[in-house]
Length: 210
Ligand code: URA
Image (cartoon, rainbow, N blue to C red; front, side, top):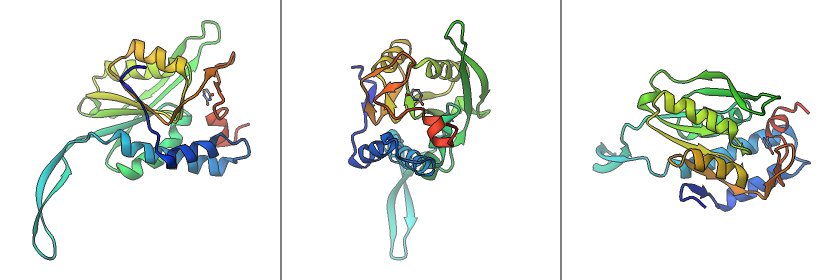
């Protein structure tokens, strides 16, 4: 597997993924679990943020201590399920800006087509983290990465909860520079491009649309 794929095996993340997979988990709990899992994953995805030393007056003395050194982030949810990860990641990085990317599958060609893209104006000064709970074929992720590259985002990472081997292969082949973080890599995609065993349609489960 590519060096750029990181599976975050933290027990809390693995436990929450099991609850997400359970078909008996309802929409409210599903939304909470997606948000919590995203927050835990964000902790790992931001591990390389650079620090600088500052001096702070504590009630007792001056302390040489560290703060994040001016790195600007943008989270980019892929609509619609990616939206469910935003509350969790912005709880950890409240100063981050949010962009949105929407794609649909053209029924005749099966191609992923961009229908919506609204990115922060200063995206060229920001490190972009694309979020989507599921990496299935990777087609919409590749469209999102293309857009961010066109707009010169400083760097691009991708964070998902469940990935398929096919999606990872597709994205790492086209974009070997993009780091992929996931909670688990599942077995395969079925004929409808659902991840197996997966958790079903993340958007439908999150928003109760089915
Ligand atoms: N999107 C989902 O929500 N679920 C899948 O299994 C694949 C894509």
